[in-house]
Amino acid sequence: MTARYISLRAVSSVAFPERMMELVEVSPRLSRWVERHFPVGSAEEVLASLGGLPSGVVGGQDIERIQASLVIRTGGDWPAFQERLALAATDWRDSLVGAGLGNEDWRHVLDGVLGAE
Image 1 (cartoon, rainbow, N blue to C red):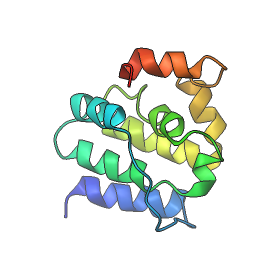
Image 2 (image 1 turned 90 degrees about the vertical axis):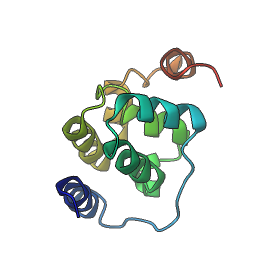
Image 3 (image 1 turned 30 degrees about the horizontal axis):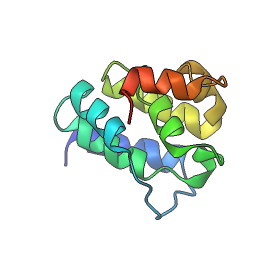
Image 4 (image 1 turned 120 degrees about the horizontal axis):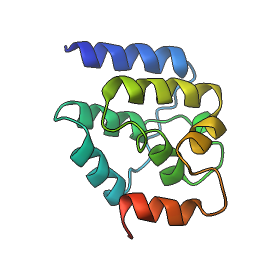
């Protein structure tokens, strides 16, 4: 068990005590972005975390929008991702605004970062 795995478990259990077992899909373009920007090992953990977000974090929003808001401003940095994950547990709207996805043009912004589908 790596330190990164332990850190993820700690953040997940504290940030999301009601963690749902239902997994959500991570889009292919977001998966590619994560794999390009995070180191091997971290990328898999990030994708697993994004796929396991509880419904309270998603808040009825587009799942790719919420998932992307947690990673696109991290620069592939594991601790930065953990901070954004903890922030989302408090208020997912802060994650959207911090990632530049809080306005009506969020689809255009997301296409610019991840590429068109």
